[in-house]
Image (cartoon, rainbow, N blue to C red; front, side, top):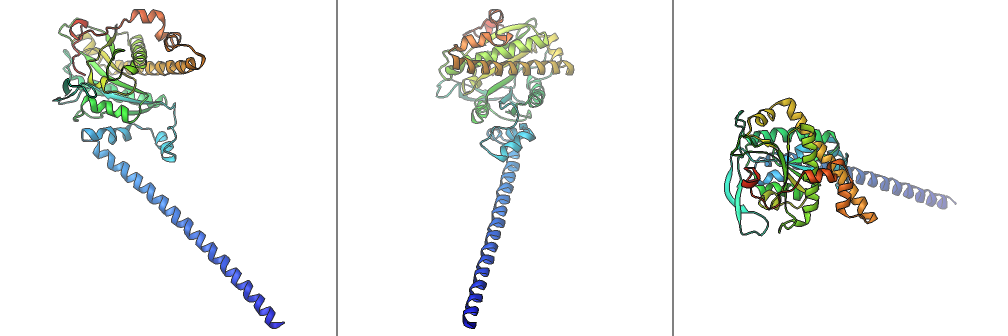
Length: 349
């Protein structure tokens, strides 16, 4: 009997020891998992911090400083929670290119993917005839304000550049939008002309027959219409038209819907001075942002139309007032026209 009791006690003791060992082992694994997770988070944070200085160089600007600096804190938090989730907000990503830079780069690059013809990589732009302010500075001023306005409206925003002292070609700027799969690529410019009386605003997109990205024509044309109509409505600047051309390398290299906005003529003393007024710049930014809002409303209508069999063209004209038949008639395109015969000096993007 005593021997049987001792055997039973020994068995109970061994079971208890096994349970304790298993529990400790599980706890150790949990701590190790937490530590590994912390290490991964720290590595990700270090990677983000290292990306910012890399953005100071030309090509690195596409994924480094510009992408990190333009993302809202809420969007960053959502992305870190799961890389597969869209950031918080309205779900749309807009890439903005402040046209030109402090020093142009006359080195050549293909005008489009696989093209034999070339253009200068990037120019420094024009300058205000009255204010003397360079175009690259005006473009950046508006771009920075537009970024803030769009973020406030729920968009995610990436900038191609945030300073003037960069060297980023037009194809590299398009790569920012392409690699980030932007929902819209907005290129901010101001115009110039040999005539000081030239005035007004236009937008630019590709033609339907563009050999590089003609399949983006319809969406890019809608984007161009929406931005131009809303901009002139808000600012009172006269409306020129949507210039359809395949001469802009920054458009040709784009793989997402794209438009260039020529905000006004810096060669016109009145428009030049107006575009340097801080209060008027706020109006300009509001107009551009309104146009972007209108564009995404059009996209929603086009998506709904695709489900019920309505054509894309019908959806576009039946959407916001900015794309009504009247407005379409008032805003003819200048497909194939050159810079000289459309009154614009915009020969380089």
